[in-house]
Length: 139
Image (cartoon, rainbow, N blue to C red; front, side, top):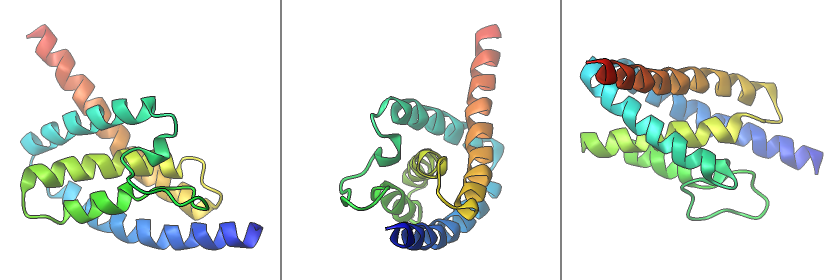
């Protein structure tokens, strides 16, 4: 069972790494105004996900009994490739929230490393949202 778990983790690492590379490029290309909108979406998705009984399965339609993750990240990634900017933002926000929770207790170091990278942007966007809310309250 140990080897099966590691094999699944490395397979998942390959998929998420490829997705992360694409999403990160998209994040770096966002203008500041759209980044603020994305921050609000990330904050909303994170708030919902953290209340879910199993946040790594948040947004999943199908969860295999042997798998420690659902299909939400893969679906979100596919939607993030869509042409509609609003759908892309919602999908990236969902992807970040799901992957944050999916990888935070990963069994292999490479997935934990991916978690740290994605968590950095996830937390940065959540903090941006909080910062913008504070500015609006003062103004």
